[in-house]
Image 1 (cartoon, one colour):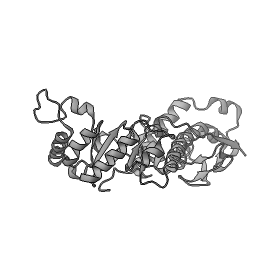
Image 2 (image 1 turned 90 degrees about the vertical axis):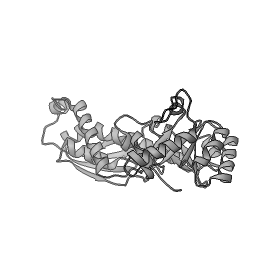
Image 3 (image 1 turned 180 degrees about the horizontal axis):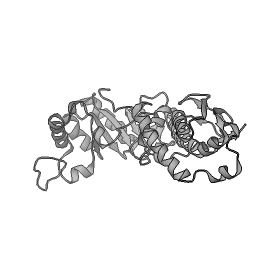
Length: 308
Protein backbone atom coordinates (compact mmCIF):
# COMPACT_ATOMS: atom_id res chain seq x y z
CA UNK A 1 0.00 0.00 0.00
CA UNK A 2 1.62 3.28 -1.13
CA UNK A 3 -0.77 5.86 0.30
CA UNK A 4 -3.56 5.98 2.84
CA UNK A 5 -6.31 8.43 3.68
CA UNK A 6 -6.06 10.30 6.95
CA UNK A 7 -7.36 8.13 9.79
CA UNK A 8 -9.48 9.75 12.49
CA UNK A 9 -8.34 9.54 16.11
CA UNK A 10 -9.51 11.28 19.28
CA UNK A 11 -7.56 14.54 19.05
CA UNK A 12 -8.10 18.28 19.44
CA UNK A 13 -9.93 18.55 16.11
CA UNK A 14 -12.37 15.77 16.94
CA UNK A 15 -12.83 17.15 20.44
CA UNK A 16 -13.73 20.55 18.96
CA UNK A 17 -16.32 18.94 16.67
CA UNK A 18 -17.79 17.08 19.61
CA UNK A 19 -17.94 20.20 21.76
CA UNK A 20 -19.77 22.11 19.04
CA UNK A 21 -22.31 19.32 18.58
CA UNK A 22 -22.84 19.01 22.32
CA UNK A 23 -23.52 22.72 22.67
CA UNK A 24 -26.14 22.51 19.95
CA UNK A 25 -27.68 19.43 21.56
CA UNK A 26 -27.79 21.08 24.97
CA UNK A 27 -29.47 24.13 23.46
CA UNK A 28 -32.11 22.06 21.66
CA UNK A 29 -32.87 19.95 24.77
CA UNK A 30 -32.66 22.48 27.62
CA UNK A 31 -33.57 25.68 25.79
CA UNK A 32 -33.65 28.80 27.93
CA UNK A 33 -35.64 27.28 30.82
CA UNK A 34 -33.62 24.14 31.47
CA UNK A 35 -35.08 20.85 32.69
CA UNK A 36 -38.39 22.08 34.07
CA UNK A 37 -39.54 18.60 35.15
CA UNK A 38 -36.51 18.06 37.35
CA UNK A 39 -36.53 21.64 38.63
CA UNK A 40 -40.14 21.20 39.74
CA UNK A 41 -39.76 17.80 41.37
CA UNK A 42 -36.16 17.31 42.58
CA UNK A 43 -34.47 19.48 45.24
CA UNK A 44 -31.35 21.16 43.85
CA UNK A 45 -29.04 19.74 46.54
CA UNK A 46 -30.06 16.11 46.02
CA UNK A 47 -26.96 13.93 45.35
CA UNK A 48 -27.14 11.15 42.81
CA UNK A 49 -25.29 8.29 41.17
CA UNK A 50 -26.15 6.27 38.07
CA UNK A 51 -24.64 3.48 36.00
CA UNK A 52 -24.50 3.67 32.20
CA UNK A 53 -25.32 0.12 31.11
CA UNK A 54 -25.43 -1.57 27.72
CA UNK A 55 -28.59 -3.59 27.10
CA UNK A 56 -26.96 -5.34 24.12
CA UNK A 57 -23.60 -6.86 23.22
CA UNK A 58 -21.49 -4.73 20.92
CA UNK A 59 -18.45 -2.49 20.66
CA UNK A 60 -18.33 0.70 22.70
CA UNK A 61 -17.45 4.05 21.14
CA UNK A 62 -17.91 7.63 22.26
CA UNK A 63 -16.83 7.55 25.91
CA UNK A 64 -14.71 10.73 25.54
CA UNK A 65 -17.67 12.39 23.82
CA UNK A 66 -19.96 11.51 26.70
CA UNK A 67 -17.40 12.84 29.17
CA UNK A 68 -17.29 16.15 27.33
CA UNK A 69 -21.10 16.33 27.18
CA UNK A 70 -21.36 15.73 30.91
CA UNK A 71 -18.83 18.46 31.63
CA UNK A 72 -20.69 20.96 29.47
CA UNK A 73 -24.05 20.19 31.10
CA UNK A 74 -22.80 20.39 34.69
CA UNK A 75 -19.10 20.69 35.62
CA UNK A 76 -19.89 19.31 39.07
CA UNK A 77 -20.64 15.87 37.64
CA UNK A 78 -18.02 13.10 37.77
CA UNK A 79 -17.76 10.81 34.74
CA UNK A 80 -16.13 7.47 35.57
CA UNK A 81 -15.61 5.20 32.53
CA UNK A 82 -15.42 1.45 33.20
CA UNK A 83 -14.03 0.44 29.81
CA UNK A 84 -12.41 2.02 26.74
CA UNK A 85 -13.53 2.85 23.22
CA UNK A 86 -13.11 -0.07 20.85
CA UNK A 87 -13.63 -2.71 23.51
CA UNK A 88 -16.29 -5.41 23.15
CA UNK A 89 -19.09 -5.24 25.71
CA UNK A 90 -21.80 -7.67 26.77
CA UNK A 91 -25.44 -7.14 27.63
CA UNK A 92 -25.79 -5.84 31.16
CA UNK A 93 -22.24 -4.49 31.34
CA UNK A 94 -21.64 -1.20 33.12
CA UNK A 95 -19.60 0.95 30.76
CA UNK A 96 -19.46 4.10 32.88
CA UNK A 97 -20.72 5.65 36.10
CA UNK A 98 -22.01 9.14 36.72
CA UNK A 99 -21.95 10.85 40.12
CA UNK A 100 -22.92 14.29 41.35
CA UNK A 101 -26.02 16.46 41.65
CA UNK A 102 -29.12 14.53 40.64
CA UNK A 103 -30.37 17.53 38.67
CA UNK A 104 -27.21 17.49 36.54
CA UNK A 105 -27.38 13.75 35.92
CA UNK A 106 -30.98 13.98 34.72
CA UNK A 107 -30.17 16.94 32.47
CA UNK A 108 -27.20 15.13 30.89
CA UNK A 109 -28.84 11.70 30.58
CA UNK A 110 -30.36 11.86 27.10
CA UNK A 111 -27.43 13.67 25.50
CA UNK A 112 -24.80 11.23 26.71
CA UNK A 113 -26.96 8.21 25.88
CA UNK A 114 -27.64 9.53 22.36
CA UNK A 115 -23.92 9.99 21.76
CA UNK A 116 -22.95 6.58 23.09
CA UNK A 117 -25.83 4.78 21.36
CA UNK A 118 -25.13 6.26 17.94
CA UNK A 119 -21.36 5.90 17.98
CA UNK A 120 -21.39 2.44 19.58
CA UNK A 121 -23.90 1.37 16.94
CA UNK A 122 -21.50 2.42 14.16
CA UNK A 123 -18.59 0.69 15.89
CA UNK A 124 -20.62 -2.49 16.42
CA UNK A 125 -21.79 -2.74 12.81
CA UNK A 126 -18.29 -2.03 11.54
CA UNK A 127 -16.88 -4.82 13.71
CA UNK A 128 -19.40 -7.24 12.19
CA UNK A 129 -18.12 -6.43 8.70
CA UNK A 130 -14.50 -6.65 9.83
CA UNK A 131 -15.11 -10.03 11.44
CA UNK A 132 -16.92 -11.24 8.31
CA UNK A 133 -13.77 -10.85 6.18
CA UNK A 134 -11.25 -12.06 8.77
CA UNK A 135 -8.38 -13.98 7.19
CA UNK A 136 -8.55 -12.16 3.85
CA UNK A 137 -6.28 -9.31 2.75
CA UNK A 138 -9.16 -6.86 2.31
CA UNK A 139 -9.95 -3.91 4.57
CA UNK A 140 -13.35 -2.37 5.35
CA UNK A 141 -13.72 1.37 4.63
CA UNK A 142 -16.44 3.86 5.48
CA UNK A 143 -17.77 6.51 3.07
CA UNK A 144 -18.99 10.12 3.12
CA UNK A 145 -22.57 8.89 3.72
CA UNK A 146 -22.50 10.29 7.24
CA UNK A 147 -24.85 12.34 9.40
CA UNK A 148 -24.21 16.04 8.64
CA UNK A 149 -22.02 17.48 11.38
CA UNK A 150 -21.19 14.06 12.79
CA UNK A 151 -18.71 12.94 10.12
CA UNK A 152 -15.51 12.89 12.16
CA UNK A 153 -17.31 11.32 15.12
CA UNK A 154 -18.88 8.58 13.00
CA UNK A 155 -15.61 7.89 11.23
CA UNK A 156 -13.91 7.74 14.62
CA UNK A 157 -16.52 5.20 15.71
CA UNK A 158 -15.79 3.13 12.61
CA UNK A 159 -12.12 3.07 13.58
CA UNK A 160 -13.16 1.89 17.05
CA UNK A 161 -14.90 -1.00 15.30
CA UNK A 162 -11.75 -1.97 13.39
CA UNK A 163 -12.61 -0.30 10.09
CA UNK A 164 -10.62 2.16 8.00
CA UNK A 165 -11.50 5.72 7.05
CA UNK A 166 -11.98 6.71 3.43
CA UNK A 167 -11.44 10.41 2.65
CA UNK A 168 -12.77 12.84 5.24
CA UNK A 169 -14.26 15.15 2.64
CA UNK A 170 -13.95 16.54 -0.85
CA UNK A 171 -10.82 18.39 0.30
CA UNK A 172 -9.05 15.23 1.43
CA UNK A 173 -8.56 13.25 -1.75
CA UNK A 174 -9.47 12.95 -5.41
CA UNK A 175 -12.22 10.55 -6.48
CA UNK A 176 -13.05 10.90 -10.17
CA UNK A 177 -16.49 9.43 -10.86
CA UNK A 178 -18.56 9.01 -13.99
CA UNK A 179 -20.31 12.33 -13.36
CA UNK A 180 -16.97 14.14 -13.44
CA UNK A 181 -16.09 12.47 -16.71
CA UNK A 182 -19.51 13.14 -18.18
CA UNK A 183 -19.12 16.91 -17.82
CA UNK A 184 -15.53 16.98 -19.03
CA UNK A 185 -13.54 16.37 -15.83
CA UNK A 186 -10.75 18.52 -17.19
CA UNK A 187 -9.44 22.02 -16.63
CA UNK A 188 -8.27 22.21 -20.22
CA UNK A 189 -10.70 22.66 -23.10
CA UNK A 190 -12.26 19.36 -24.02
CA UNK A 191 -15.13 20.78 -26.03
CA UNK A 192 -18.04 18.40 -25.94
CA UNK A 193 -15.83 15.32 -25.71
CA UNK A 194 -15.98 13.27 -22.54
CA UNK A 195 -12.61 12.88 -20.84
CA UNK A 196 -11.36 9.33 -20.44
CA UNK A 197 -10.43 8.13 -16.93
CA UNK A 198 -6.74 8.01 -17.94
CA UNK A 199 -6.83 11.59 -19.24
CA UNK A 200 -8.55 12.74 -16.07
CA UNK A 201 -5.80 11.17 -13.92
CA UNK A 202 -3.01 12.91 -15.83
CA UNK A 203 -4.74 16.30 -15.73
CA UNK A 204 -5.59 15.87 -12.07
CA UNK A 205 -1.98 15.14 -11.13
CA UNK A 206 -0.85 18.27 -12.97
CA UNK A 207 -3.46 20.34 -11.17
CA UNK A 208 -2.48 18.96 -7.75
CA UNK A 209 1.21 19.60 -8.36
CA UNK A 210 0.54 23.21 -9.38
CA UNK A 211 -2.27 24.29 -7.05
CA UNK A 212 -2.47 22.12 -3.91
CA UNK A 213 0.12 22.17 -1.10
CA UNK A 214 1.71 18.71 -0.96
CA UNK A 215 -0.66 17.80 -3.79
CA UNK A 216 1.64 15.07 -5.06
CA UNK A 217 0.90 13.16 -1.84
CA UNK A 218 -2.88 13.32 -2.30
CA UNK A 219 -4.58 10.06 -3.24
CA UNK A 220 -6.03 9.96 -6.75
CA UNK A 221 -8.83 7.42 -7.13
CA UNK A 222 -10.96 6.75 -10.21
CA UNK A 223 -14.28 4.93 -10.55
CA UNK A 224 -14.81 2.48 -13.42
CA UNK A 225 -17.83 0.41 -14.40
CA UNK A 226 -16.25 -2.08 -16.80
CA UNK A 227 -13.12 -4.19 -17.13
CA UNK A 228 -12.35 -2.45 -20.41
CA UNK A 229 -12.25 0.90 -18.60
CA UNK A 230 -9.92 -0.64 -16.04
CA UNK A 231 -7.53 -1.86 -18.75
CA UNK A 232 -7.36 1.61 -20.29
CA UNK A 233 -6.93 3.32 -16.93
CA UNK A 234 -4.19 1.24 -15.29
CA UNK A 235 -1.26 2.60 -17.38
CA UNK A 236 -2.08 6.12 -16.11
CA UNK A 237 -1.14 5.01 -12.58
CA UNK A 238 -4.00 6.04 -10.29
CA UNK A 239 -3.47 5.20 -6.64
CA UNK A 240 -6.81 3.39 -6.35
CA UNK A 241 -9.42 2.19 -8.81
CA UNK A 242 -12.99 1.98 -7.54
CA UNK A 243 -14.77 -0.99 -9.12
CA UNK A 244 -18.41 -0.01 -9.06
CA UNK A 245 -21.11 -2.68 -8.75
CA UNK A 246 -19.03 -5.51 -10.21
CA UNK A 247 -19.85 -9.15 -9.58
CA UNK A 248 -17.36 -11.35 -7.69
CA UNK A 249 -16.32 -12.92 -11.01
CA UNK A 250 -15.64 -9.48 -12.51
CA UNK A 251 -13.73 -8.48 -9.40
CA UNK A 252 -11.51 -11.54 -9.70
CA UNK A 253 -10.82 -10.68 -13.34
CA UNK A 254 -10.04 -7.10 -12.33
CA UNK A 255 -7.51 -8.29 -9.74
CA UNK A 256 -5.83 -10.55 -12.32
CA UNK A 257 -5.63 -7.77 -14.90
CA UNK A 258 -4.26 -5.32 -12.33
CA UNK A 259 -1.67 -7.84 -11.14
CA UNK A 260 -0.45 -8.30 -14.70
CA UNK A 261 0.31 -4.65 -15.41
CA UNK A 262 0.12 -2.39 -12.30
CA UNK A 263 0.62 -4.16 -8.99
CA UNK A 264 1.00 -0.86 -7.10
CA UNK A 265 -2.58 0.19 -7.89
CA UNK A 266 -5.06 -0.83 -5.21
CA UNK A 267 -8.59 -1.96 -6.04
CA UNK A 268 -11.68 -0.94 -4.11
CA UNK A 269 -15.02 -2.74 -4.42
CA UNK A 270 -18.21 -0.76 -3.91
CA UNK A 271 -21.90 -1.40 -4.43
CA UNK A 272 -23.97 -4.41 -3.43
CA UNK A 273 -21.96 -4.86 -0.24
CA UNK A 274 -23.75 -6.30 2.78
CA UNK A 275 -23.01 -8.84 5.47
CA UNK A 276 -24.14 -11.66 3.20
CA UNK A 277 -21.93 -10.66 0.25
CA UNK A 278 -18.88 -9.04 1.83
CA UNK A 279 -16.95 -12.29 2.36
CA UNK A 280 -17.26 -13.31 -1.28
CA UNK A 281 -16.13 -9.86 -2.33
CA UNK A 282 -13.11 -9.94 -0.01
CA UNK A 283 -12.05 -13.35 -1.32
CA UNK A 284 -11.67 -11.96 -4.86
CA UNK A 285 -8.41 -10.29 -3.82
CA UNK A 286 -9.42 -6.62 -3.74
CA UNK A 287 -7.64 -4.58 -1.10
CA UNK A 288 -10.50 -2.29 -0.14
CA UNK A 289 -14.23 -2.65 0.34
CA UNK A 290 -16.24 0.55 0.97
CA UNK A 291 -19.54 0.22 2.82
CA UNK A 292 -21.92 3.15 3.11
CA UNK A 293 -24.15 1.18 5.49
CA UNK A 294 -21.56 1.50 8.27
CA UNK A 295 -22.81 5.01 8.90
CA UNK A 296 -26.06 5.53 7.01
CA UNK A 297 -27.74 2.34 8.26
CA UNK A 298 -26.17 1.58 11.66
CA UNK A 299 -28.73 0.97 14.41
CA UNK A 300 -28.00 2.61 17.72
CA UNK A 301 -26.78 0.29 20.45
CA UNK A 302 -29.33 0.04 23.28
CA UNK A 303 -27.68 1.80 26.21
CA UNK A 304 -29.49 2.97 29.32
CA UNK A 305 -28.92 4.78 32.57
CA UNK A 306 -29.76 2.89 35.77
CA UNK A 307 -30.18 4.96 38.90
CA UNK A 308 -28.09 3.74 41.84
